[in-house]
Image (cartoon, rainbow, N blue to C red; front, top):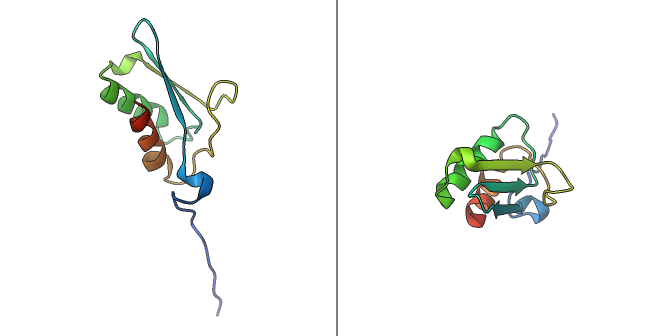
Amino acid sequence: MGISLYIEPQTPMSVYGAEPCHIRVQPNGTVDVYIGSGSHGQGLETTTAQLVAEHLGVDFDDVAVHQGDTAETPYAFGTGGSRSGPVLGAAIRQTA
């Protein structure tokens, strides 16, 4: 018989509970979104652009998502498990 424990970090815990998002609206009306997380097949680019387009009232095609480039994106813990949707999504919505 054995016992095993696993601790799943939840969103309120330290760095796991925050995710930065920077948005720049350009003079021509296009929007650049900078996120610290990097997509690993979850569709973060599409979801991010959809959220920004909806909350800013701009066309989806006018939103460019920048991610993973430490020279231009904010520092973040990064993607992991299912935290990208609720944590990053909330950051995007609040920023927009």
